[in-house]
Length: 215
Image (cartoon, rainbow, N blue to C red; front, side):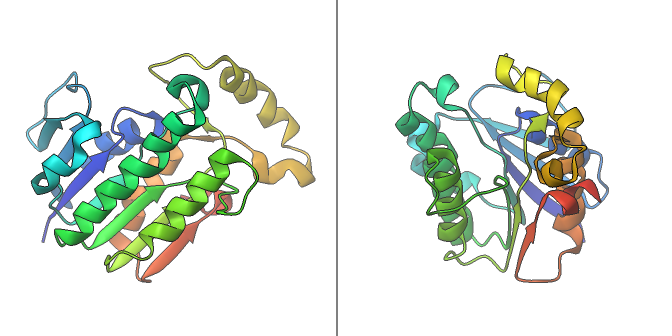
């Protein structure tokens, strides 16, 4: 039996790679991408709903399917403030997860972050950790949480610090004690997400950096 996938964050480093894999996967007959801007291509399996995420709850009926892939994410610089970043990295994703769970979506796949911790002194890692905690309280049959480090890939925006990190970190992280910080491509994470969405047996599973590299 084929599945229907829902994806938010379909234009990001992981999301766009995942979207293509889902569209070319025989296990998925339909892929619903819910985006803020219209996608620049079409596909026979693709349904693209363009909405204003400020009014997510007005679009509850769109969040119906078998698997929700949550790939949203931004930076403080891009968002303008920590509170604006939290709106994307926590609020939007949690509201989407709530609606999907209420609509009977059985599997939730979240792109979180290495080091996510609800008690972290880092605002970013704290919001990621809080989201992980909160979605576990929802009624999903299965939850998959992916915790990559620095993501490498083509972005719609230019992030100088991340571009520098993408060059320097692979060299530094050859040192054993820095290995857990090595960058990973959006393609590698997406590949693991697709596989997990088809094969995960446990109710709750975390996929850390080593798991993602072994996709």
